[in-house]
Structures are given as structure tokens and as C-alpha cells.
Length: 111
Image 1: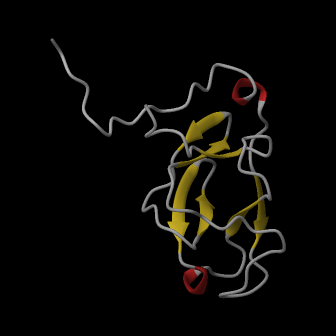
Image 2 (image 1 turned 90 degrees about the horizontal axis):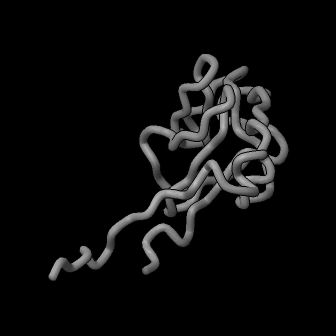
């Protein structure tokens, strides 16, 4: 008999609704060093995915209470707010359900 690891992670199904039809996340430039754009998305300690350039991915260096900065077209990095520099593209959004291109996968470790 094969037993499953107790805390096996299950990634979301990005081919299924509603994630398949989700738009790319929106990014706004930081107005000044250490200043975040209105509506910035604050990261959590749960697996977070962002859709950029048509592809869902997890930002590098995940941690809680930070922001997601896009470098180039699709490289995403979790960044402390104090380290954000003027003009950097910061993810903005108020929803975590994928409807704004940001998905927090709170059920990935459940049964």
C-alpha cells in the first residue's frame, strides 16, 4: 500500500475555469523610491501565482508582507517595500482569486 506524504502540495489547475480565462496581472510604476502605487498587492505566506505575459508563475523569493515587482516582461520578484525603486513595475490588485491575474492558493496543502 502506498501512502501519500502528509503535506503534499497540489498546484492549481490553470487550464480550468476561472483561471484559464484570467487576465494578466496589472502593474503600475512606483512613484518614488520606497513608495508603492495605489492598490498595490501585499503578499501572503501562502503560495501565490501571478499571470504575466500570458503565463502563470510564482514570484522568486516569496515572503509575507512584501510586493511583487516585474522585471522585464515576465520575471517576478517578491520585494520588500523599502527596496522598491522609482519606476519599478509593482503588481496592483485587490482580489486573490485570479480574477485580476493574481491567485493565492490557500488550498494547495489540503487533502
